[in-house]
Length: 493
Image 1 (tube, rainbow, N blue to C red):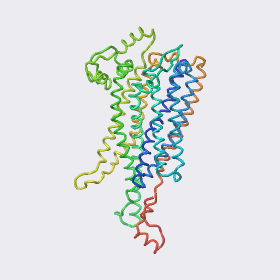
Image 2: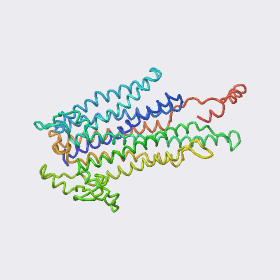
Image 3: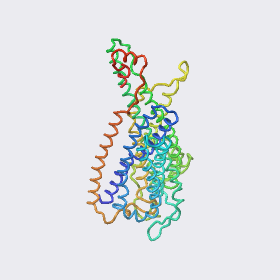
């Protein structure tokens, strides 16, 4: 193992860890803004309660994302100076726009939102969270546009061994970027939707458990096994957040599927080695099959997915290797085949399960017909448990997609222009990279524990509920007789 291998491991570990927070930031920001908009339009307290509850989860995630993201930029100079030298003129513009425009917008308005409760006018405060949410998505645009350039470089020329940008608009409207950006952003909404589903499902189960305890306590107190339990107000509130997440996840899943189809066509044209590696296709094949799992193949499906023609020819790994050697010189142009093969299936399979769960949930919680027409169906307890258990699936799917995207490009950092082996810093040795990798791994492990503790503690504690209205009849009796608090509100909380 040499410095190049450890540098790749370090960048991979820190990037994947950072990427845990990015999708949640993108999706949660919009979801919180939507909840506050609903409160602004309706004035209903449960929307405000949900806004503040999920807003805290959003802030915890945002802070952790900022901390872990800073390391990425330093690594360009520490471990990848040759890469930075080559791409600096091209990457400078989109990264500067991301920092000076998008991140500045996001962080500034997020600060106004945090400290603006009861200080800013209601409309301005709502505009602040929307500006922060939009800023995070604009930030994703610039970062993904820069990343897309590495896969399909456009709008540049090579001068004295360095890429010089000749057309910023071409870089920002790169056809690869225009497909990759909505695909990744929509996948981020699926991840955020899965997170909200898990939180809402947990709270529904928790509230039902508390309600059951309350009913038993009330029955024991009045000596009546049929005593009424607490109102369903809390469970209905979590049903609202769950339904919102179901809609968001289902709609985002449609966008992911559509842009994924376009991505397959672009891979067929621009990155045939990645496409061949995802299937493990050895030779150019007309009517190429797609392997669901080893031993289960669908004839012609790979050709259909990549070219919308079941008889189209898909290039194979060994034939591409031979052509690349003729074009670029002797080298191994094959990425890690097992990682690419299984990353694609994890991405596709887990993503489909998550979106399928959201569609099933929309049907289960639909409005009823017949005698109970107009009434909403309660969330089945088994479905709430399924939402909690499914939390890792969208996260694993988006990480697998990122591994497919980045490892599938190897051995290039810039497709067709710069090899990874030529991108590493020449003055950084194995010892230096090993020490920094160990330190980052330990530090990120500590941050992971801190993040998990904060999120779990907040979810378990639940939101601060507004006081429940008192029953006038019970309140009158209590005030005139003993001054004790009424029974029902006591059992509710």
